[in-house]
Length: 141
Image 1 (cartoon, rainbow, N blue to C red):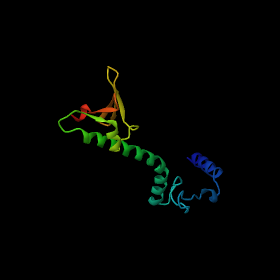
Image 2 (image 1 turned 90 degrees about the vertical axis):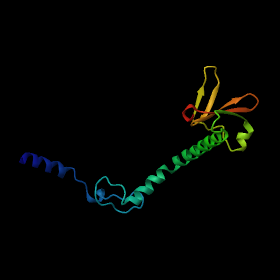
Image 3 (image 1 turned 180 degrees about the horizontal axis):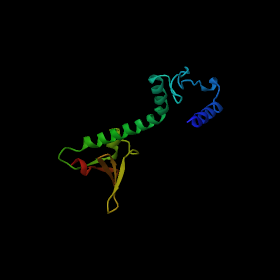
Image 4 (image 1 turned 120 degrees about the vertical axis):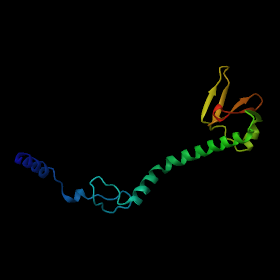
């Protein structure tokens, strides 16, 4: 047993670093950290501030796109009455309601080659003459 103890002391004493290198500071406020050697923040507030700042840029873009998708879905849903499955509407009417054609969640192409653009469970099919056929997906029928 003394061999292992001596070996441990040898490794410990050889790999020690001066105390000045062991003092770490909080990544947000710069206060000295006490406790675990892998600690990065002095408290929960600093940890939350750091994580919120790191995610703020990405979350802003994602939030704006999700809001546009939700608004598109809401507009399409408001056009279809409860008993109807499809409705024809002019493209300009959708634009006047605030619909943004560049945002959709997925596409559905029929066997005949027609492509429907969906915002979640509601979609539209561009038709000739700037018209649109608004449809309700099978999941919401």
